[in-house]
Length: 233
Ligand code: DER
Image 1 (tube, rainbow, N blue to C red):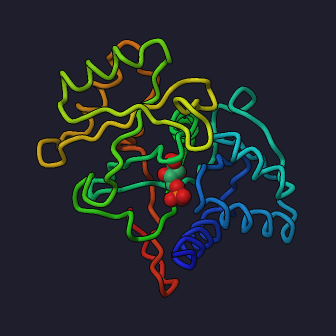
Image 2: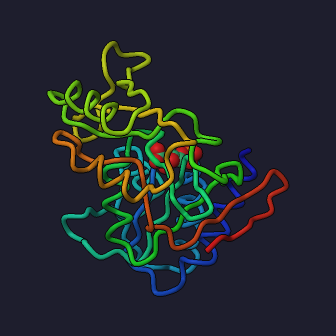
């Protein structure tokens, strides 16, 4: 629910923004929207000197439209904090991202940040990856390799790989990097060591980045429909 997302987003910003944060990574999706609004309020109120690094064209637009200072990973490779959403998080903090197709820059920003914070509706929390998020793991691949990678993923890891198609545009979706996205519908009962799975995927020629974020999350702020927030570390 919106209240769940807003409460998680504001709780995270309120708690994290003051600890000497100067450079912050801004995620993509819908939950990040109230987070950026809250950041802009605090920057205004406390006259903070904050620089924002986006994870997508959508995040870039969000930074600009909220009057925040925009920069990039070319200027800053060490971020004090990064805040982003998630599609599903399990109890070991394995996380699926990329529902919005932005996982490549999202993972770079998360990798560069001292603290990577996830904000989400509590429904994203699950016992096993695949229990709640059923659209598969997003994998960015270079266009000429989409059939090679599809075949290799299905051969090595099973499941089914589908090329993500546009809705109002015919043909495959292009990422902000100009690549295709494969959604890998994995067999949740068979898969458990996500670190190994991620390494296997990354080794396949043509794969750019996966939506598997393993051992990257510092804290997860999970909001519920009453606006209560649970913090998982
Ligand atoms: O696509 C992404 O990685 C987004 O961050 C997604 O995981 C969260 O989107 P939401 O905040 O709209 O649920």
